[in-house]
Image (cartoon, rainbow, N blue to C red; front, side, top):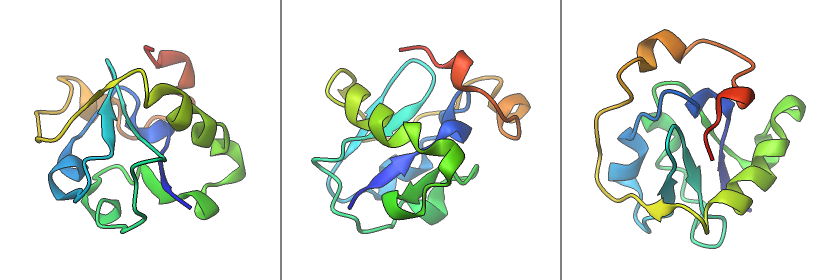
Length: 107
């Protein structure tokens, strides 16, 4: 099993999780992060670091977020590795509590 970045990351892209990842499994897209399932070692240190609770173990992903398991696997080979924390997106605080953001994802 691996960990999965969920919809709450879209248009926020807080990168607190990146600093604690021991294997550099995060990949950076234009407006969200994903986890490379082939790199993740299931250590869970990233989970408490995410200020929007956007990371869960694959087995705990809610039914309305299951598409994000496939999305992380699909996008991680296309996006570049991120290994250092960066500032969140400028309007992240405005987006952090919104639901239904999948249409906002920039691939």
